[in-house]
Image 1 (cartoon, rainbow, N blue to C red):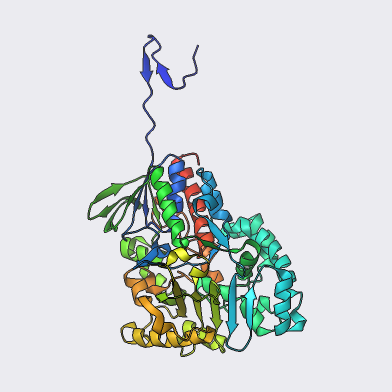
Image 2 (cartoon, one colour; image 1 turned 60 degrees about the horizontal axis):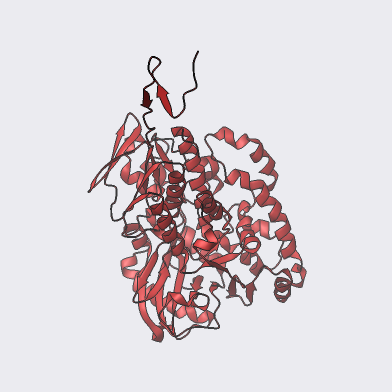
Amino acid sequence: MSTLQTEDSKDASSSVRIPRKPRSRKKVIIIGAGPGGLASAMQLARAGCDVTVLEKQSQVGGRTSAIERQGYRFDCGPTFFLYPRVLSEIFESVGYDLMEEVPMVRLDPQYRLTFGAGGQLDCSANIEAMDRQIAEFSTDDIGSFARYLKDNRVKLDKFRPILESPFHSIWDLLRPSMLSALPYLHPNRSLGQDLQRYFSDPRLVIAFGFQAKYLGMSPFKCPSLFSILSFLEYEYGVWHPIGGCSRVSERMAEIAGSMGVKIRLSEPVTGVDIVQGRLQAVETDDGRYEADAFVVNADFADWITQAIPNDLRKRWTNEKIQKKKFSCSTFMLYLGIEGTYEDLPHHSIYISKDYEKNLVEIEHEHVLSEAPSFYVQNACVTDPTLAPPGCSTLYVLVPVTHQHQNVDWAAESDRFRDLTLDRLAEIGLSDVRDRIRVEHRITPNEWESDYSVYRGATFNLAHHLSQMLNFRPKNRFDEVDGVYLVGGGTHPGSGLPVIFESSRISCKLLLADLGVEP
């Protein structure tokens, strides 16, 4: 007769209790302490894994880190915090409340759009307020905003299961959720064409389509699926985390550390050990790290071409990656300002008078525009903690071509800086030069060299249909066993909400492969 053995085993001929050997914890190495890597660290630690994060920079966050100079604090990259649902659920899964850990303010207006062709729009989720402003552009378009929201509410509902699931093979394109969403995909229709079904005024088409720049693409080339980007802003809000988006990364690192995650800063990976197609260990100047699984949160194209020998890759060889379409880059100015701009909203976007020409210059001609569109964050109207008393920060972003032989940034950087400062007068900032007390600059050169971004393409692989879903690098990387991808270079794509979603997808795959219960 046998007995059920639980915590301890018993010898059949003795009453001596033999302690059961403790189950060994699975070791996971995460390469990169960006938002996807930190979210993965929290989830894997909660599942009981022994997690170590290796980060080449001296601080966490990657492109979502902080730049601090003489009492001024800037977000390095993302400044819009959108669709907090995904990260809220990740926080909840490890026992925390996101809004308590990182207090946030929902902005209203979300941002101000100023059109070089004339007109201004203070974008708000208030339908009546939007219709009053839309009437000044086109009376024919009154009511179109509400119709746009209604239709995209259904569209997001159809596509959420797709964006929250991995793709393993081309046959996944035939699963029921895909077939159900197919009538809403319209693969031959661009985002711009989709929006023209709602708005007759071309400025309004741009107002609901410029968000394609979050993907580094033109709305006239971006798939119509991404009409949901603007919808997410209006439906779920544009939020400002107190301390900036970088504070989200910092708090995630603090929570991960409290859960036992080891975060090793200033420790880049310098080598890999691949045996029979499986990654066994990574090496740094400080040691060798063996693990049961590896999560790569580094820029996909840069890391894979630098770390994994080309002859071990077939689908993602150096030569094939070079032929892929990559997003635009950004020219950045971080300005510590004496005084404040109380009349300037938290977010301001200036749309060049010839917007389509500006897009062609970025994506096709690969030249610098003399009349570019730009974005300015004036965060201190919401969050005065970001600057010394009586001062403020201005974050200025100009979309530009990714690294290309047509642009020599060593020669162009100063000239383009002056042109950008001149352009700020278009939104009423004509005295910025006299008020600058701190200045920091990032060009595509620095995105590539300092932040290890392939071609300086800050939004990764472009989001054409031929580079999405099954055609994007897979969450469980299929060229090297034991490697899982998170971040903008894998499915679902770029942008903080989907980067956090990529961490959930990859962690579930990893834990299932290791036989660990999520």
